[in-house]
Amino acid sequence: MSTDPAAVVLARWASELRCADLPPDVVDAAERHLIDAVGCAVAGIRRGAADPALTVARSLGGPPEAQLFTGERLGAVAAAFGNAVAVHALDFDDTHPGGLVHASAVNVPVALAVGAAASADELITALVAGMETVCRLGAAVPHGFHARGLHATSICGPVAAAVVAGKLLGLDAPTLTAAIGIAASGASGLLEFLHSPAGTKQLHPGTAVANGILAARLAAAGATGPAGALDGAYGLYRALADRQPDRDTLLGGLGSRWETTGIAVKPYPCCQLSHASLDAARPFAGSEPGTQAGAVTVTLHPAAVPIVAEEPKRRPRSAYEAKFSVYFGVAAMIIDGRVDLDTFDHLDRPDLLELAARITVRTRDAGGVPADAPGDVEVEGHRSIVDRAAGPGVRDKAAANLGAGAHAVFAAVDSRAGAAALLDAIEGCLT
Image (tube, one colour):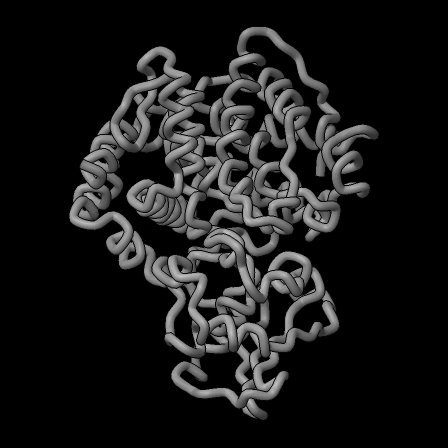
């Protein structure tokens, strides 16, 4: 493996990547996640969850070089910002389990904004380059950013967005290295929203993609960025995770080991760290746990507890906070037999809150097991364990989110018609 700085290695690989280099299963995965992302965005826009970001995106204006999913033509930075927030607004978008990053939210909007006139091959190639980048950046320090109160998606996202934008702009390896350096310098994103009813996390992909596109354009204009911005003495990992990355996870097998195929489609519109618990609770749907405390016990990875299981989360103060409450989610699964978008519209249900108040959370020995697996729920002595939450069929999920316009979106992807045709199909879902 090369001993060059990580940014140099990533930039060299990404700049040289061609669609012909991508195995069929990687192309298929990229197309699946593209469909899932736009479905999540359409659902978010329909429910008004992205309204503030769309309002601001429209106000930013710019040359009509890119398109909001709603159809307005704006500057690429503005369109990507609004669309990225829309993808993530319901927390229904995909997650890479190893990196704990929302991969599509920080890559798809950039590809469709900067590559608005791109061919399908160019779009998919850039998208895969960004997917590989964001997943590897997060997985190289498992839970490292979250443990320090930082959102991995918004730390790694600007770098991935710069790679996608730089690839579509045709940057050579040294210029793309500079773009990565500039983007890493703008990485930020606090998890303090976990202690409030605020929905700040919804905005993180938006600011990430804006920073990434700006970084690529700045580099193209001659601005420079440090090659050590990722793994240098004052680079992203040392400064924000207080450790150096696992270099093999970050850079090993580029072009032969594909993280894109390991990105998980979400079955539930809430934090990934609750999903396996929800699956484990499903067999108890319709049961009536006893009224004593501890009648329901959920066992979690220690890293998941600060995110989804702190005491105040038993009674969420907002729909977004409820999405980060394993208590609320498990109670809904047991009582309703489902957790879907409508679950989080009714926070004052006495039956859910009463059961949530009686759920006991305990932790297991981490033992190298990912934080989202396995799910382990016990109800009055009966135990259910699942290895990992199972994702739904992507097209079934997307069809439900896209509504009557789903066929046109699928056709645009299947025919490899390019970004413009896909954007028009997405707009058709919202008119």
